Length: 80
Image (cartoon, rainbow, N blue to C red):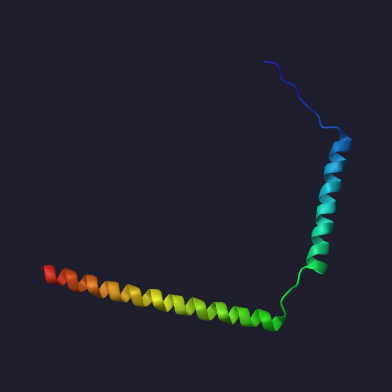
């Protein structure tokens, strides 16, 4: 078996590195100048909304679990 090693020329590697540097630079510009970040108040309101929604969903699931558990318990006790 003959092994052939293919080397990438140095100038192609430099072009790739320049592309990475350009990507990082453009990402920084986008995050600092183009993205609209929420204010602290908007962030707090969103966090509270998510917390309330999570609590409501948890209570609904808990209630369904309790009802199904009660019904199954009644069903199994009626079999004996």
